[in-house]
Amino acid sequence: MTCCMIWRWNFIIRAWMISINMAQRTELCRWVYTQFPDETELNLANFRAFEAESLWKLGKRDLAESLINELIRLYPKSSIGYVTLGSFYWTSDWSYQYGPDYEKAESIYRHGLSIKGLDDRVSLEDNLEQMLHEKEHPEEREEIKQSRLKRIQGRKNL
Image (cartoon, rainbow, N blue to C red; front, side, top):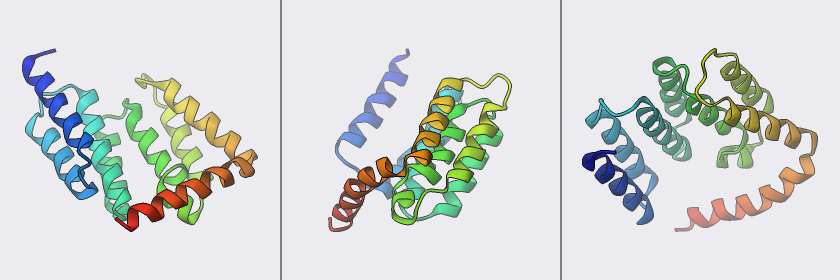
């Protein structure tokens, strides 16, 4: 790991530790992957995913989905795009407020799993398995939903 790379990761971690808001996180992630285009595909894909996740949390779902689809186009063998996109419809705050879209999440996960040479099949398989389990046991999600909704409401009051 180079000195510059270590500095970048320390910078990012410290920025998150001081609780930057989602808009700032979005800008920071975009800055990282545009300023360091020679970084590894894994890091570039991760920061693109972080940016999209932040936009999703800000309610900019169309833009977030567009960015994730661009990530998948650029890095089709990177599981992070499929994991993030599926989570938008299954485990995001939005899904707890408006209800999960299990079919969409399952379709995304299965599409990712169909990609030959995918870098991390296990993460997608785990997400798919957990999502299908939750779909069969909605009472478990209901317990989680109550605490999630309280956290979401608490963040809105900040």
